[in-house]
Length: 250
Ligand code: 5RP
Image (cartoon, rainbow, N blue to C red; front, side, top):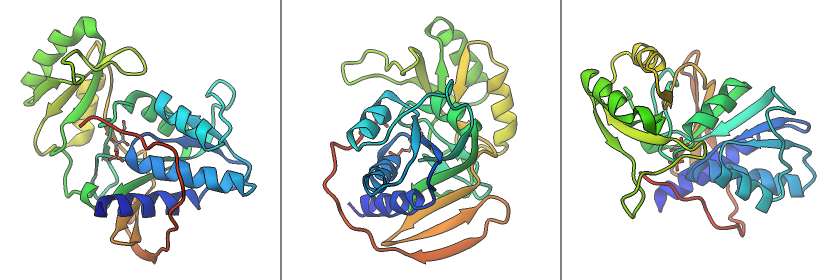
């Protein structure tokens, strides 16, 4: 798929930013997958890093490609995190959580000196909100929160597994996918959700990403948060044998 080539180009380019000795936050999803695989290749070639995975799925992948892992207890400061996104706006505000890992992803991003987003070109949007915003909730509070989200102008939908039962996150919670349409002020909405009891986390990542690496055809562009400066970089990527890829529910 054309998109896979863009994801691979973005993931591979981001993996090159990691330096010897770094503590690296490892994102979740089909784009972060390519970054983790590329980092695994660099580790095999002698790079010394230690990873903090944002999901059980990514922990399994990292082990399979030979990246040693640690925890936030042992390394509460992360040098660089590479993660995907469902939408990226011009200020590098993000919607994340399509893969259900938003809570650990936000904790890891917040503990990082630098968060680099990797994305294919379809993720770049003028304004957030077309992608339903994932909101992680405790099951006990779900109905109350659904009513609040409706009052905020969205239609929430409980994320389910193929058998119809609720999808359960790595943290034992449920996810409401909330269609807001265009979100005019992401910071205000984030604040509203943050102050709702029973909401564990939501997928609005405001001001966390410093750089986005976006696959475009067989090259990548860099978007920077401060100046939204664009740089086009020609890349070559070599396909390597890799373990089973990550899947996610949309
Ligand atoms: C997982 C995420 C992912 O980073 C996001 O869903 C993008 O995934 P993909 O790279 O597969 O499109 O937030 O919780």
